[in-house]
Length: 362
Ligand SMILES: NC(=O)c1ccc[n+]([C@@H]2O[C@H](COP(=O)([O-])OP(=O)(O)OC[C@H]3O[C@@H](n4cnc5c(N)ncnc54)[C@H](OP(=O)(O)O)[C@@H]3O)[C@@H](O)[C@H]2O)c1
Image (cartoon, rainbow, N blue to C red; front, side, top):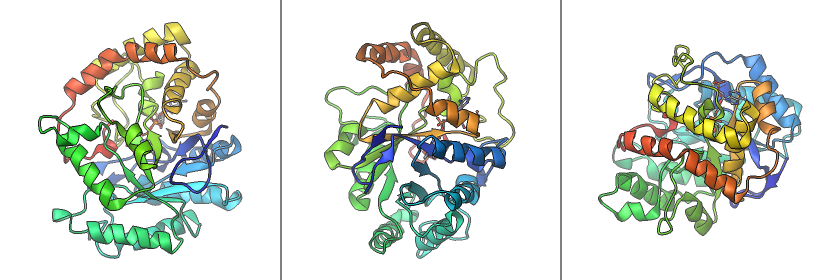
């Protein structure tokens, strides 16, 4: 397993990390489905063990993933392996499990203590402010920021993380006509205030391509010397052919992907066509498509690590072992061309709603 030194982290991590949202199973938060249906705890735990056996040292979870189940499963792993070489990341701020706002006074510290207890560890390597809603008029922002940096000074956490918008360029923030202007400007303001060590961003075959005059999240992270964790690299299964347009669209009740903007028949058809083009060049097995999806993200930036979601040992095992040879620049150009019409569809169909919870939209 390749290793990477991300700016902002005090030790190397495996280039591929285990994303533990999926293994939390079904959950709702504020009445909204945020989980994954049909997850078997023993199978999920076997997936964690397999990831560790294959050299994964980065494990990403959150208080809200399965409302503690994901953290507790990861805690089971930590009981039986050497904790110290691992980088364990968790999050606070989205889980609405108490009567008060997740960033209200005292909540961040209380929630961290719960997460540490779930995980059976006395520190986190990385702790994310998971949501950008800091209460009416941002009234809890100062408290949350002060608390998270105090927790760092106390050694309870070792680095601070925050989420980047899915689509972002610095220049958009000052372009009042740009549809992402508000989100971009808000991110820049919060970044200055929070001063994170690491950012998390969605990046996959469908991510927008940026022009030479646009400072995207990768250039931004380099400039500020912060690390990046890339998520949704497999498109939640879509980009490795796990959902075809002819298979039933419906996810089991409660799965957060039900009704997701990517999981519509026209979008599946477009993705299917793009993947069919890729298959002619790279091969048509699940492993071939996974190699492309993972390599595309891995090769984007050596200062980033890639998180892979999974529900069992078979998925994570095959995802971690299908990397093969690196993609050439011609390969990357061919991938971008094959997926261009899907990217365009996605841009055209995306509602501009600065208040939408980006975490759970596909
Ligand atoms: N997405 C976000 O907004 C977000 C935000 C913060 C952090 N993260 C982190 O990123 C991690 C990755 O999650 P993600 O949302 O980005 O999902 P992802 O990695 O793009 O997709 C994971 C899903 O793809 C399917 N899959 C994976 N390997 C497969 C295989 N070999 N064969 C068939 N299907 C396979 C599984 O879905 P099924 O089997 O259920 O179909 C699996 O749950 C999360 O766990 C979390 O740690 C994500």
